[in-house]
Length: 108
Length: 114
Image (tube, rainbow over all chains, first blue to last red; front, top):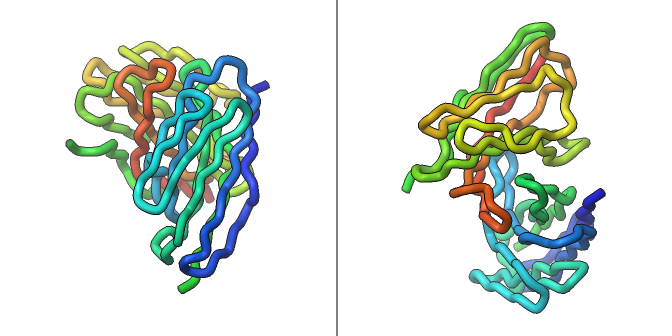
């Protein structure tokens, strides 16, 4: 069965303290790995799609990378507004399978 | 371009009742998916529709059903509500639902079952 595991579950950072979130997956024939950001009580907001190992994408302070078995979301010099839950998902058979998420808290 | 819209945003029901949730996809998107999000189980796939046809269904009881209309708008229905059905129900749309196609989520409907 396809599985997506995210670590750590929670991350507390000081403003400006860079860190990385991990998403490992087991799926045959990856069609796409997706990163979303979710604020409390809201729907997930799309960040990135990665399709093949070695691919990297950036947006502001976020950078996503992909290998054959895992993806990393790097947060560089985070600000308090980067506080959110970050979700990764893999696509299989017309559905997204999500990890449990990493909740990031950035203190000023 | 307007995003995915869901109505109502909040709903309170009692056990045994039924409920219908509505989703309007991004203009031009033909695939609509539904997910249930709870603190314990996270985001779980319910079903996906494309051109009024259900293409995939998650592991939920038959009380959960859905449909899609010719204008791509979708509804999901939950009958005989149970306390455990309390959750955030999320709708997502994509252009075609094809492999690698990005899904964009709506704000969700918060269902509380008393």
